[in-house]
Image 1 (tube, rainbow, N blue to C red):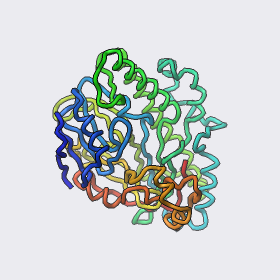
Image 2: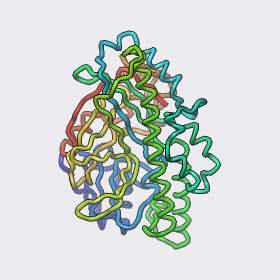
Image 3: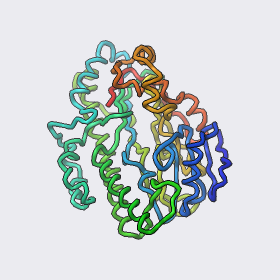
Image 4: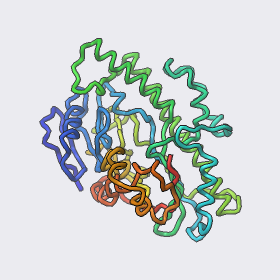
Length: 393
């Protein structure tokens, strides 16, 4: 559906693809962001928009000469990676549980980290620049090294999927792990301290910002790009292990070439040109969708996911949603659903079915088909995937 301009009485308009009115807290959060003096043209809200910290998750914020670290968030570079394999679903029979077991042995989840660091993690070029990062993270270089190629927790996942043509896909969702979080926290704290010193009036302390050209801006931008690169490579390392496991079980160990590979961020900031002007674009829970850009929009672990191609919609700053979006908080989901509900909603999927993942139950998320219908002017669907296996962090 085309965007609608929300009636929020803000200096800059807020365009929404959500297809519904914002709740009072969501409206206030949108109002706060759209009132920042350096916001460019308008704020764009994606169909999966929901409450975040400082800014709404599912928002695209273009700014001139300033950036808000908390709007980017603490999981810098969080995003998706997907690979279309040459295998068809008939090869999976009797092997899905074995693939899951091997995956869980090869890729650390939750707070766990690697015991053995593989060459693809060791040889990452970014390690050379670690010494230039914020002094607040220098003591955790070893941890960052061991976590390269690990999934993390929360809504991070690894999935085996099948499309409408019976092709097997590999998909995963992860970010910059502990190091990205620490870097973000260090810079958010600095931004808040600067706002206090300057007596800057902010509607929300989490909207503290850095001004372009300042030393603090330069330091944040350097660390942000580093963490985004870490996150992308982290997904590449895990996908390499995933592919080897699947090749072992489905191809007799013979390495195959992907038919398509996509790796995209959905929590990040970049310098881009929009409406003929260079701006800083923060996508907080949104995927870049320029004309021809491939993207990934996952549903919950019991629903479909989509590989998409961008349409380059200028009003959205060439963006689309990053998933289904939460319908309820994690605590509310735990109180609202039982273990039986989880088992029923993940029927036919090889995955954890315990209370530890109850907050990730499919009903805690918005219906993915509705979310997709609301952004038909942003992306076209390349493939619809159904999950047959899910490893949760």
